Image 1 (spheres, rainbow, N blue to C red):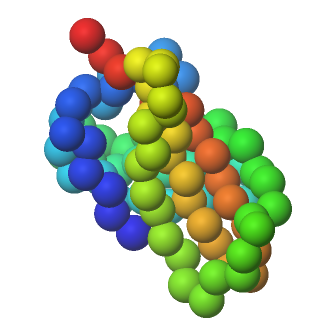
Image 2 (image 1 turned 180 degrees about the vertical axis):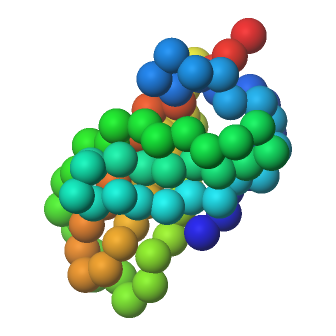
Length: 90
């Protein structure tokens, strides 16, 4: 799974430069892995049940309305979502 950060972000005290990232999930540790040109970062994620079943993993970024942050939502089969909050870096 891949995501594209158009602008830099902050997560778990680390700065993520804009760019392409490979996204993975470590379900045992409750972490999402972001691998890019600057290396690999493991960040805590919130696990929640998805409202729909999925056949293959996916990742997407969603802007939070009225706030300077985005949510990284990673869906894994059969119906699990992992959520990470990314603060906009200025």
